[in-house]
Image (cartoon, rainbow, N blue to C red):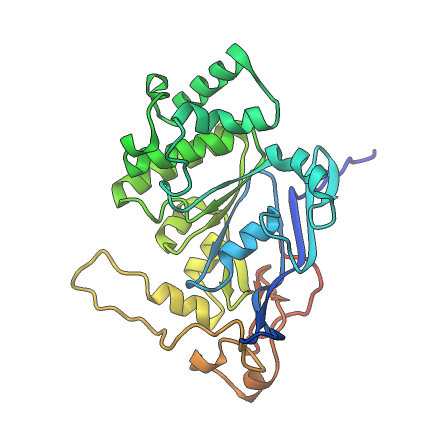
Length: 342
């Protein structure tokens, strides 16, 4: 009797060796390139359909640059971003901008600031309908119906469609941004600090909305955030970034219950406790490494209490550990593996 094996699911997104370098020029009339800022450097991961991957790290660690490079909002310097578009793998870094426009409905972004990301001179109806008009996906009564349904789906009243963004609260403006991102039925959403500018109570409402929409529409999220408590609530896996590199990637439970990289442990130690009597035990000191002037070895070595001579001389590779996670640290005993995390 032949036993049929289950097919391995195909990742929706495969990021391989993604880099984004910004040139640094000298001052004066004859400007010469004197260096580069490695905002994102050799980023590797897989993203499965319906999964939420969190990107966390301090400001300047390269999270937003990575998200924008994946969507080709900015052009990567190197690497591959393979999008599984209707069972057809497409490298977003190689295609022409005319062909890229055809893929825009499949991948969208929710921005951090719910006010500056909305045109103050456009009504809510025009903001939400604009993607449909640009891509010629609907017009007339069909367009109006889709806008009304999407406004209801994100918790807005369709009768407010003629209002302008200034007439709404921060949470409502972010719902407008979510409606604009979802109006074309995308599969991949990059949430760039989508709740960080909102009050705590409003954050909870927007997070619950994102989770409900994910289950209903089968969305896949890359969730960029500073707030680790939010990441713990919404993400399936977490990738920790430092100085443009992913230094640890694992399931959310593994990251929060048993962090392996010293930087991940330091980040978790900085999370405030709800108990006012419990003292802070933050073990992270110093400043984030300058991506334009990185040390020769591990970028985190100057701030790490566990550093050794090897840490200061050689950059650690992102290695697979026996428990399935990936860590870039010389202090761990891992198994070298070339497989893309995920």
